[in-house]
Image 1 (cartoon, each protein chain N blue to C red):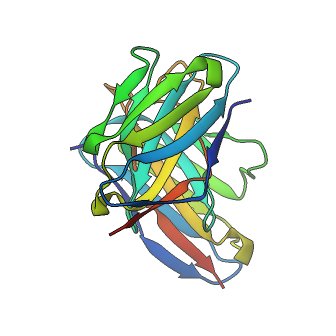
Image 2: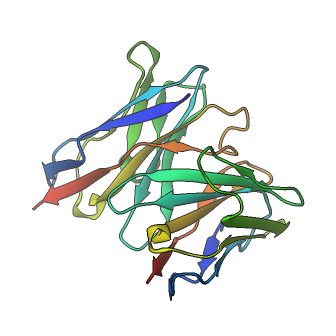
Image 3: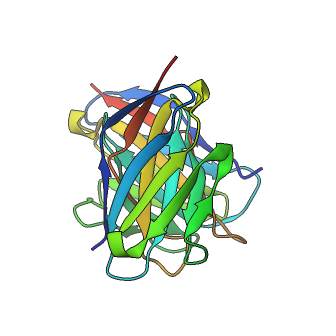
Length: 116
Length: 115
């Protein structure tokens, strides 16, 4: 069975500092991996996804994530935090052959706080 | 583009009654729709997968007779919580997989409170 672990339920960084949100996964087959962002009272928005192409994946809003098979990790980074990045971030995994068209297993989420 | 709506956005109902939640893909056709449940400050848990015109597939531990799912068209799926109880109070989120790209898009969620 697949699973996702997000280290740190809350992460606080200063505006302009590096953002690093950690995600480790467990999967019996090569996984599809996703990062989603959820702003208050809004639906989840896809930041980026890994689908077995390039291991370094670039997403929207300046975020990127690197797939490391040996570490079973898919950490999310952004070089310089902005106040608008404050939100809840979810890492998710899918083992299905349908890429994004399969039910996802989500991590518990990380609340990102940006300090002015 | 690729917008998914849910209706209602919030609902309060009395214990023992049934509540229907709609999930619509507004500008694309969805081969598959998913229903998730999110408890406060917790992750989303997949409840069921529905394909247009066929019976939904429920995850282990989800009562299919309690959470009725109908996927009548390529743009509409409904979740009916039957004989609701306070423990069914939660945030229900749907997502729809784009028929062409298989990209999955999420609705804004429906908050259900059972009193």
